[in-house]
Length: 314
Length: 257
Image (tube, rainbow over all chains, first blue to last red):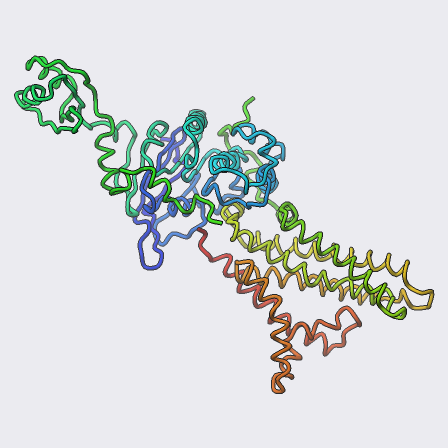
């Protein structure tokens, strides 16, 4: 087995008598994208800051590239980090932000221009001060910043926040490409939809504890089958007749605790015309996520607005 | 060739930590690459020139000596430059760039050391600028009398000491408070507060040792006696070294959000 690039073991953090992160253990391997999912305030950001040596754990251990982050001689050339896209000096020009860091970690300043172009910020955007940037532009600048030192590992906290759908697809492709060439990506999000398309593995955290983790396929599988028919009543009796337990989804369809083939046989036996039949991908995961987030998941827009540390407060 | 980072085994450069010289250069850059920082430095330079012009125009002919003009030129430097020192530290917190700075250089003490060195470099540069301005003014405005150029190496070193300690004090206040406004207010209110406290009869004696405005005042005028040096160093221990030590501890220990 390849050595893991990011590893946490029983990571725990307490602040003001409250346990923010408790016994968090996971690992990220080369060539994979790991989605770190959880509602706001679940402990994602705190975990990531402990990974990057910015916050001291009260228990457990976080290692990157086999050791303590702070022991890396020049971490900017090994690990690309985007912890908060708004944490940039508002009065500094976009290109200068990259140039200052390029100088710090010892890469040529022209990397700043290359990366501005790579993340879709043109030269005029590079000349603008960060104050004038939209959140989406700040995320792009932050991603360029993370890529400056040609790192092997990327740690990104809510990088999709503020991106438009086109920007999100662009970022997914960039991260996929990075991982396919052997890189390791850990990205957090409070929205399941944002990461399920790109992540190979998912780590789901709620109230500071890991609620579930595994490959995306493992977690998305086992959700049962979704089925719809022209006649819902006859479908229900056909399913009952076959001894399959089904739950009405309220829109004429049913979520059946069985494989699609069994459901198809039941429909055939009952003589029902089906309009839809397929695996219910992620239904279980969505339910888990909903349980963690409470009402927030039902209103993703409200949840997105409720991320104070990603919005400029000044 | 693609511009995106290619995940590759660590290059040699990744094995070398950024040197203190490079970090100092970065800190100097950060002082000048924002509008606020640049204007503060330009304002300091402008005031330095202005105060020398004023002394030349308004002062007695006898005052127009190199030593007096340099002493005047150093006042805006010692007054405004520490604010650049404060901002060098506090802007990392108010603008939250500390997340980036300390992710790239996890040894926070090294970053602080680079800031102190950058402050010293700026202080020396500002002193040299003041020397140049005072020199030009002396050449133009001073009389032909003997002694207008009289100056000593010792006094020059005292001038450097005066400006550099002011700069370090600014950085120390910034590190101690981590917020710009209170640090700047404290820096400017302290001398006034001391003036008030020192006017109380029982505080007069301690103030002679603890009020840095009083102890450092002769620094640009004449060579200090041993006793005066002792007072200067005691007051600096209180207003520079102590805040610096506490600020150093705070910066290293504080949780980043």
